[in-house]
Length: 308
Ligand code: NAP
Image (cartoon, rainbow, N blue to C red; front, side, top):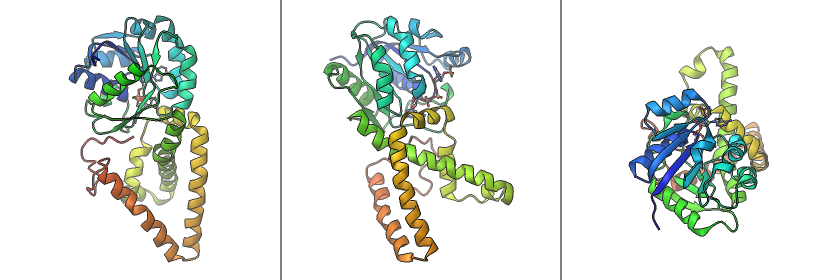
């Protein structure tokens, strides 16, 4: 099997699309990289950054002759883009995406794709709070997970090629059922973002009362939350709208645990608080041991961070 693609088309050239373009170019994974995005301004920026070889506003034209097409647009835009490109896809092409939610995206894309192409959904678990074509960097996916959620009956060779593609970009690749993916990500990524948005929003409301103190004296915990809460609002709106059931389930569990902590604080139950906090410490140790985080006190975030 040859890993190199003849023509890789990226639809959407923000943080993820531009990082794929840079990494694929560096690793020579495609003979030609074609870029498409919906606005002239972003396309022009991609051109200036020399992210690809050819540039199109028309996504249909961009996918012509491509043997790999990756949608790098917000989850909520996947259906419209799929409808747009479907008539122009080359027979045998592999179509993939990078959406942070899988079940809804699969249901939105699959019905519009012709039988002649192979659909292999993917989700690189790598990101920063920055967006747009300037935010990309070739190392984004290194030592990060990329989860593939092939469909029952997916072409094995196409899945294997996408597996190899992401491995070549530096990711650790694993396959997972889409429903399971959405539940796992709801607790590991989506809920933390929701909490961060809420925490920072609450502090912002408080700020009018306590002047600038919240910002001036913000401790590490709050500072870390501001990084998550600075993430792209369009992307995260779409994540919550499209992973509704799993997020609501995790939020319900979270609220129950929070109520238990609230009660322990109210009743001065130090033992309950200690037990709750002790139980969770080992998870961080495991994450560090798994190489997904650094033990440095600043989380190593003086360098470019890469954790969605
Ligand atoms: P981004 O930096 O905001 O870039 C989004 C790209 O999609 C831009 O090229 C934008 O085009 C285009 N776009 C936006 N809305 C669109 C629409 N309605 N129709 C067609 N194109 C549209 O976003 P990103 O962070 O790369 O995220 C892209 C995808 O990656 C999302 O599905 C997200 O769930 C997934 N993802 C993100 C992260 C992360 O941490 N950021 C991590 C893993 C996966 P214009 O600029 O021309 O408007």
